Length: 199
Image: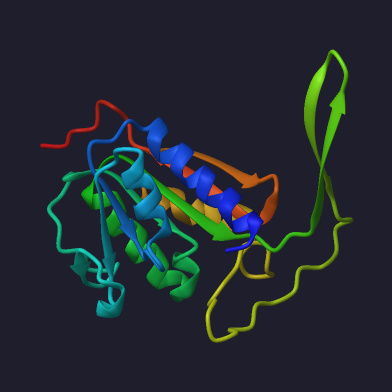
């Protein structure tokens, strides 16, 4: 847990808390850091994973979530979906969409090289500056034993990934950004319309 990952955990908590959820489901809890921290802030977090050794609340696949439609306010998966083949990850996202009431929050690896800096100007404030690397031909992705795909690889442009997320979560508003201090982590905030029929 290096500093950059802790900063990503802060963004996870910040985005979840902003939704004012009564219930949260985290898919792929890993060592349980998000749940432990979120619980300290009074959030009701349940977890789901296929690995019983992680002691999740639900032992199940993300592609077949054993939870009723519209039964969880916020469903999240942080640095998880890339561990599934791309088409399978979109099936998991559709499941997250099915069970969520308010929002789906995910983070994914984005390999596009950029240099992030912070500039402080007296009396004007602090500004975050990101300088993108000059555009080169994206590299193809090769499975490394962990990640089946990553954003900004040749087959997985940000435009394509965003489009597929939109198809998997119809009628939702999508906002995306990279964590300034950890550009490898790109967040997607996927919010359902308030008037969507959830009965």
